[in-house]
Length: 71
Picture 1 (spheres, rainbow, N blue to C red):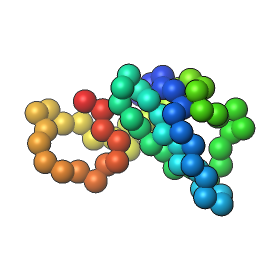
Picture 2 (picture 1 turned 135 degrees about the vertical axis):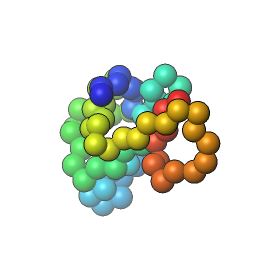
Picture 3 (picture 1 turned 180 degrees about the vertical axis):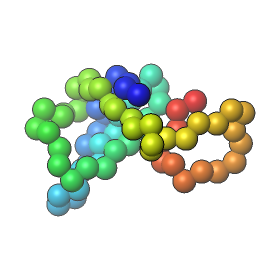
């Protein structure tokens, strides 16, 4: 699954990067050890979500450990 998002914020701690994205009003976050120099705040990017790293739910209620949620 690929989605188009905009980079909102980038936090760096030594070699760890935490990047915050806006996808149609939904905030998504990513952690990365390496970050392309073209990734900057305000840039639009295509995010790829591996199907093996996602969960789908219908009429979900409760708590899950996934940090990114798209309704």
